[in-house]
Length: 170
Image 1 (cartoon, helix red, strand yellow):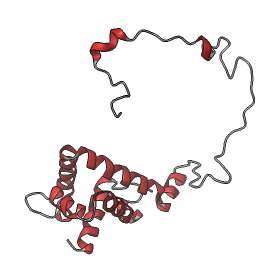
Image 2 (image 1 turned 180 degrees about the vertical axis):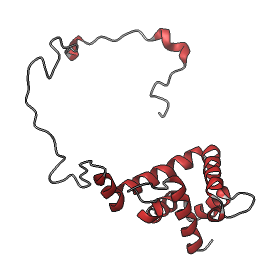
Image 3 (image 1 turned 90 degrees about the vertical axis):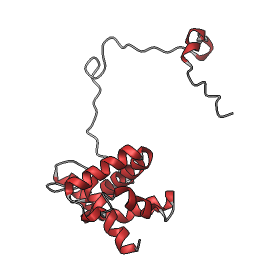
Image 4 (image 1 turned 60 degrees about the horizontal axis):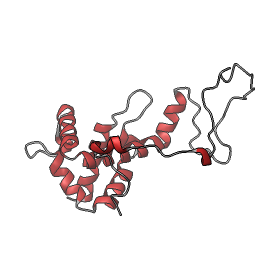
C-alpha cells in the first residue's frame, strides 16, 4: 500500500470514528489521521496499514470506497475481532482529536472555559470561602487510625475465589 492510499484509508477511518457535528470538525478536517498513523506505526510496525486495510475491507472492497453504513459495519467488525487493537486505535484517535486546535476552539464555542495549556497560569477556579456546616457536613463520616494500630484481617475465607495475590509476576 502506498502512502497516499494509507493516508486516505486512515482519513476515512478517523472520520468514521469521529465524524464531527456542528462546530466540531470531522477527524480528517482536524488532521488527526497523521498522529494516529504515527501511533499505529510506532506500536505495530509499518505493516499495520496493510493489515488494517484487509481488516476493514468488505468483500474485497477498499474501506474509503464503502458507504457510510458499510464503514460503520467494518469498524464494528474490527472492534469485535481485534478488541485490543481497536481500543488502542480509538484512544489514539480521541487523544489526537481533542488536542487539535480546531476541536479546542469548538469546545470553547460551546461556552466551556478550556485552557489547553494549563501551565503556567493553571485552571480558572472560583474563589472558595469556607463556611462551617455549609461546605462540609456537620457530622463528618471519616476517621483516622494511626498506622501502629492497624491490624491484619483474616482473608482465608476468600481463598476459594482464586483472586490475584500480586505475587504472580515474581
